[in-house]
Structures are given as structure tokens and as C-alpha cells.
Amino acid sequence: MNYIRNFCIIAHIDHGKSTLADRLLEFTNTISRKEKKNQLLDSMDIERERGITIKSHPIQMEYSYNEKKYILNLIDTPGHVDFSYEVSRSISACEGALLIIDATQSIQSQTISNLYLALSKDLTIIPIINKIDLPNSNIELVKNDIIELLGCNKDDIICTSAKKGIGIKNILDSIISRIPAPKGDIKLPLQAIIFDSIYNPFRGVQTYFRIKNGTLKTGQKIKFMSTNNVYNVEEIGIFKLKNLKKKILNAGNVGYLIAGIKNPSEVKVGDTLTEVKNPAKKPIGGFKEVKPMLFAGIYPIENEKYKELRIAIEKLHLNDSSLSFTPETSYALGTGFRCGFLGMLHMEIIKERLEREYNIDVITTLPNVHYNAYLKKSSKNPLLINNPYDLPDKNQLEKIEEPYIKAYIITIAQYIGGIMQLCIEKRGVIKNQSYITNNRVELIFELPLSEIIFDFYDKLKTISKGYASFDYTHLEYRKSDMVKIDILINGKIVDALSTLVHIKNSFSIGKKICNNLSKIIPKQQFEIPIQAAIGKKIISRETIRSLRKNVISKCYGGDVTRKRKLLEKQKKGKKKMRTIGFVDIPQSAFISILKLK
Ligand code: GTP
Image (cartoon, rainbow, N blue to C red; front, side):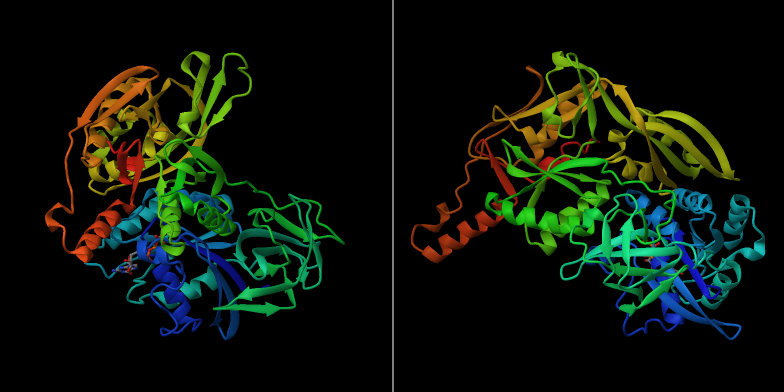
């Protein structure tokens, strides 16, 4: 155990985690340049394109230090707010963390939130300033910021350029000299923490674990402590470039396990695994189930593809237990699913994967949070509303509650005013304002979650010219004066466009939605009224004027192939549309109606 080091890399998004991870792998000859295609750890296509890490991929390296061979287990962590739970679970499998800070950006909100997570698990922190090759880097300033934040010495901070490969040996040496070897006792009953799982269609669920105490062997009978489910260990192993089988793994090690588990929901991240014969008395603490925060309908553009969509969503769910789904029927869109996501980015990724990997064009409806609706006649147990259209009539309602968050915004002094104004517009209340370093301020707000899911982050970036970062934690549900706005197109309510808004903003939002829709929906052969209503009351109206467009009129009858081509072209244009009450509505209508300026 003295020759093992388990560590993770934590950072604000884009500060260079994946690039550094690649360099470490290269330097230790774990992979050669040839084997590496772009960023190896970000193996999902979408991850590579968007440059973000979503899933944690552990990998083992070997490194000699003072003529002794060490095993280094690196657990990569995602960098976006939507995925912060994945960070916390990877952290719990490590003894140390490399804290990467961009030399041009210094400390940002996720630097701090990830650091706090790491400190709460007693991890040793190695501060690293990355991107020192950039001409606008300000190493001295960033060093001072780090010293103020961590209370460390100047010499503790390592300067690197992951891109140019500068300072990599220093990092590897420090991992060994500064991060403690895992503690644990081989003789104690088996206790291993589960930090991830993936689904393999042939072998079932592969569970990723870190052994705290005891020994894990093939053939052993094990159980998960939160479910008491018992399994037979078929295969265990470690993470090299490919998985490498082992017969036995001792305390301190990180590895994978295959035990004929067919249903991924039986494996809960954060759960503890123990032996049936000689079970541990207690699980390792810190287990919490991930709950989706954002809900939206997903419908196939072509109704016949419902079955295919169901299979695709089920498959995606196998590798992503934070994606939830239940069948739903919409008058406007037919049959589809109401899905739960961790955040907007998560939702966009799922939509893209359905379209790219499964070739199903889908409509996603306007996302919303989950509301509690208390009825007058039974005011104890609230109805859980995750589709606004399902909200009961106003006069049956006692009250509505919505989820709140605590937002941590880090910025520099000159942008405080603008950010305050934005947060107040979004119904926020300021709770604290404090200087973290000389010119860096942390603002803490309480805000309704629903107000930050659309354009909050974009607006924050614009107001602060990029000098603001944002992170949040969840608070409780609070009472709110919400009303439902229904949208009527050509006189018909389009249930998928209903939305819940605060009463204070309802008129302006209703007007904006009608206006936006009137621009998005293409003109058609007849006039289309678009109305917003609260209950029976129409609060706004726009009209799309008619247009007569006959694509084949200019073909003078004769040429059949030409005619067919034109019709095909028109059909293609329509593919991404949905016809509701004789009106063609493009996908963008369902999302952009709330993109309010
Ligand atoms: P997430 O996975 O999204 O959290 O990002 P990340 O922290 O893994 O960042 P990533 O490694 O993808 O790097 C972000 C961008 O910074 C990429 O365009 C890298 O090429 C660039 N980058 C990383 N390290 C360096 C460096 O040392 N110097 C320079 N100039 N660019 C770097």
C-alpha cells in the first residue's frame, strides 16, 4: 500500500484538466502519442467536441521515484456545475488532489467549490498554475491569490504548461512525496466505495470501486450495503489503457468489478460494497442519491419512431442513472417521455446523443423545474408537478412551492453593480458579499432555480465581460406566486408550450412569448393567431399573416423529376417541424419562447 497514490484533478472548467491528464499519461509511458487521439480521457465524441469532461474515467500509471516503482491511480473529474456530484464521488476515492488554476484566469467559482469538496474529505491539495506559456498569464498575481486562499507557501505551488509539457516531472514527484499513501487494513472486513459504473451489453454492469479495507477476490460473495443485494464476483481488475484482469485486489486499490448485475439501477454510486461471509459493520459515509433538477418532454418528430426512442432512452439511462424518464402523452406532440436532467447542459447532451448516436430527430419541450402544488382539499401532501400543463386549476390550489438555490458568484469589483441588478431581476436576494482576494469578490444570492436555468449564465458572462464564474447548491422549496401561461396557436392550446411563471412577470412574459413565436413560426397559407392565456383570460395576442407559396407552380407542369425534387426539398425543410392544428411549428419554438431579451 505504501507504493500506491490515489489522486484526482480538480479545476474550474477549461483550466486544463484533460490536457494535464494526457501529459501525465504520456510522461509515464502509459500511452504513447500515437495511441492518443486528441484527448484520450474525454472519450465520448460530444465531450471531445465541446471540450468538457462528463464521465470520470480512472486510469492507472506506473512511475519510478527514488528508484522505487509506484502505482498512481488518476480519477478524472467533470468540470461543469451540472455534474458536480460526479466530482464529489471521485474525490471520495482519493487521498490527494491536483488543484489546477489557469494562469490567466486565477481562482474561479468551481475552483473554490471543488476545493471545498476536496478539503471536506481531507484530501492533500497540490496547487498548480497552468498555461504559464500564455503571454497574458500573470503568475505572480495568481500565486498571491492561491496563497491567500489556501494559506500555503509560495514553494508549494507548481507552475506548468500542460500544453507545452512544462513542469510535468515536478507534478509526478510531488504526487509521490506529498500525497499520503492510502491507509486501510487488509485484515479488516471488506469495505469498498463505489464511485462509478458503466454498462456493458455483454457482461452487465461494470462497477468502479476503491477498496478502503480488506480484500476483494474473484469468486467471492459480496453485497451492496444500501440494497443488501448479494452477487458473485465474476471478474475484477484494474484500469490500464484497457481493463486488466486480476485475481485479487487489496485495500488501497482502485478497480472494476463484474458480477452479473443486469440492472444498472442496482448499483448506486456512493454505496459501500462488503463481503457476505464477514461483513463490515458500517458503510463508508457520504452516500447520497442524485436527483434530476430539470424536466422536459422529449418527443420523436416522427410519431412512428416512439418505440425506437424508448429503446434509445433506456440505453442512455444504463450509463447515466441521473437521467430519469416516464412516458407522457401530449395533445400536441403525441407520445414521448418526460425526462429529468441534472441541468441544461445535461439535457442538451442527451438530445444530441439521441440525434447523433441513435439517429432519431426529437423535439424537446421547454424545460422546467419541479413544483409542489398543495390542493385546498388535501393540503398535507403536495402534488409533484414536473409538467406545467398538469398544474390544477387556480381555485383548487392552496399554494405552490418552487425550489431555491444558493448561488456563489465570483467576480471582480467593477462588475458587482451589474450582477446585483441581474440577480434582483431574477428574483434573487443577496445574502453575503466578501473579498476572497484583493480584487476578487464572492457574492452569495438565494434565487429560484427556475430563474437560472435558461439564460442566466450567458447574461452573467456578458455583464461581467467573462470575469464572473458561477456555482450553486440546492436549498429547500419555498412558497411562490406562480401562474400557468397557456399558449394557443390557431385557437388551440399547445400543451407542450405551457409554462409556469411568477405572477409579477406574467404579462410581460406572455407578451414576449407571443412575439417570439410570431417570429419563429413560418408564415403559412392562412392567418395564424397566437395567444397567451392565464386560465380563460387572454393576456396577449400576435398574428402571423398568411402567405401563399406553391413550390411547383413555376414548373409549368411538364418535368416530373424536377417536380419531385422540389417536393422532396420542401419535405426536408419540414422534417424538423411538427404540425399542430394545421400549423407547422419548428423545434426552435419549444425552446426559444423563453429566450427573453
Ligand atoms: P473540462 O473538462 O471542460 O473541465 O476542461 P478541462 O479543464 O479538462 O480543460 P482542457 O484540458 O480541455 O483545456 C481547455 C483549453 O485550454 C484547451 O483548449 C486546451 O488546449 C487549453 N490548454 C490546456 N492547457 C494549456 C496550457 O498549458 N497552455 C495553453 N496555452 N493552453 C492550454
